Image (tube, rainbow, N blue to C red; front, side, top):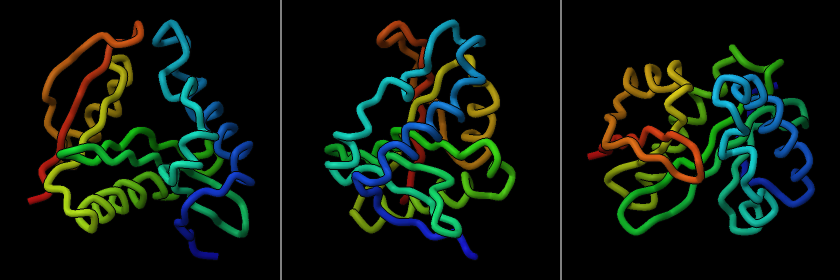
Length: 150
């Protein structure tokens, strides 16, 4: 069955939290603490209509958090179930995020990632994101990046 992107429902909460935990747990040792995405309140984010999921054969396999801001759309999190990694779901969600941003009238999309997640920084640079600054927030060293959609 083809992957289907939809807004998350409250019934998806445990699957969303599980995917985030499994996708980010390999980074805990590298960072020295849980990545920020592991501490987010997904119940509130789902209730706010900010969480999108990729469903395949009735099972959630990936999640995307998009948070509207004044001048940009924040890509707050993207996580893929480890057993589904390599299927192109992350790339599909990155494209979907840009499509949503354009539909909402944004000229830019932004994100941040931990500086220890070097492979993410390389990926985001490769697909057009530019580093804007680095900052320590909540004890996490983050790299902030923006992509122009104009």
